[in-house]
Image (cartoon, rainbow, N blue to C red; front, side, top):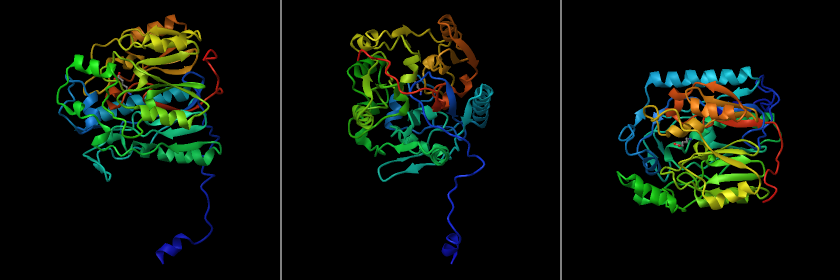
Length: 388
Ligand code: DAV
């Protein structure tokens, strides 16, 4: 009876909710004028319980080693205050801002293949959602604690699906993340830095080629060209999946041998506007991979050094969040307020620098680029590399 009553009356599609305004999903690069963006939240933020891929990323000397569980209420409130202020700043500039519906990241999760005692956050939508043209792809992810993170963004993606008939919502193949997806060498309690550097230089990363793996933040979009970091969070099969999924794009796999913890390209290789890229000086793009940019007259500049010697407490990212900037348009860039050297460099390059305070939110997943995901940037898919 109760079941039947659910089906009483005509079924109506929820297409005319008051929330529904003209929505357009479209973004081809990292610099065209930003019109609509998702900004993450720190609610239920966790230090994840130990698991193979995460152990590989947490530095030996980190204060996070051996600790996991809920982050403090105060730190969550502070991070949310900064993320709310950043959202308000973007809105004042006429950019539409959406926010996720955080799931309870404190819950343990189990799949047929693994269990973990807690999860992560939804502070960093850039890691999970890859927007290319009219498509948003939920990345496979490669940490077990981030397996269900896409759920926090589902209400938004469902809304875009209703509101924009051109929007393509795609989930990449869900990975199994058994122990076979990780190299046992990396399970060791301590790995010294020279060993790490030697391993990453010869592409001996924590993830194996067992299955397709990628995080969205390993992809940098240059119109027709996608530059993808092969490292801890994206394997060669993940890059191959992207190549087959986007047959009209050129997909370039890149490496940064000086990085002992290669995850996510947005603290390493950051385009600012057509023709200009900042490269982390400790993670230099190898010469043979630079030729492609040089023959197309793109300048690769060394990023300014970070203003800090250490990340904030309980942070899994490096001090190079300094270069994790959000470009609002080719003349305007948001830089974390304490990162004065990075701000000066971009100012000297002729950009308007908008300072944004975010450092106390870094531990929840990253910087200004990490905590956002594009929904709409003006512009179309262009070929910025006509000399192949
Ligand atoms: O340099 O630690 C962190 C990227 C976070 N999404 C780094 C990269």
